[in-house]
Image (cartoon, one colour):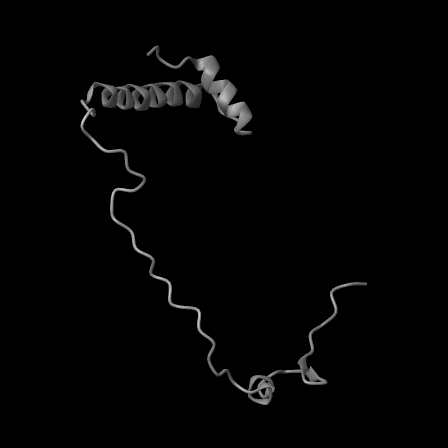
Length: 96
């Protein structure tokens, strides 16, 4: 693969709304080129007998079952409320 050009780096920086100095463009060009060259090494690997995977590790669902249970009474929930009215929390109005 061809190395990345300074114009391509400037274009990507513009798309990302980044203002890069000429020195930063030079640095990014070299760094991105190194990254691309390293990624190209992966194309040399023999992956014919490797099964495609979506994740390296086996994952299992760690969520608990959704079962109803007793909750606290409304009076207990409201007993420490700084302000309440008609059995509900009262909060400052945010609309004018």
